[in-house]
Structures are given as structure tokens and as C-alpha cells.
Amino acid sequence: MLQILLLLAAPALAFACYYRVYLNKFRHWERLGVPQIPDPKFPSGSWGAVLSGKKQARDEFRENYEMFRGSRCYGAYLFRTPVLCVRDPVSF
Image 1 (cartoon, helix red, strand yellow):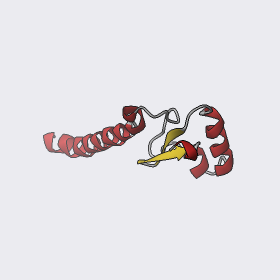
Image 2 (cartoon, one colour; image 1 turned 120 degrees about the horizontal axis):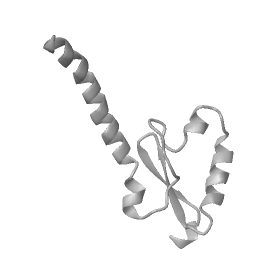
Image 3 (cartoon, rainbow, N blue to C red; image 1 turned 180 degrees about the vertical axis):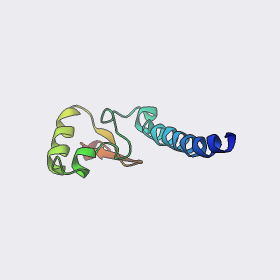
Image 4 (tube, rainbow, N blue to C red; image 1 turned 135 degrees about the vertical axis):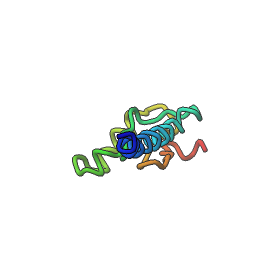
């Protein structure tokens, strides 16, 4: 009985640890003080609507561009990868 319990609990624990590490990556821009697209989702990051085909990439970029009006740049996530989106390249 204990072996079965361990056999079932081990993958669940491994997934929980992986999920926690994955979500910790979504704090990259917050730690650096860069404004970021709110509420990135597991596993697609900030671009879930684009990757699922619900939204065009140009519409997503335009909405994000307007959301961060006044900022020189903002952070996003493509899966686990942090992406810096620059609004004002002259200021860098």
C-alpha cells in the first residue's frame, strides 16, 4: 500500500516542484523593476491568446504598446523566456 502511495505521489510532487520553478521565472522583470505584462500564464507566458489563435500578434503588440504608454520598455514572457519589448529605442 505504501509503495502504491509513493508511486502516485512522486510524479505529483515532481510536477509541483517543476511548476513552482516555472512560475518563479515569471518574476524576472518584477525583480529588475521593469514593468511587465500582467498575469503570465503557465505554460505559454504572456502570449497565450496569440499562440492559441484567439488573437493576432499585431493586435497583441498594439494593446501592449498602448498599455505601457509612458514607459521606455516593458517585459513579457514567451513560454519561460523573458522578452524585453522596447518602446523607445532612442532612449537606450
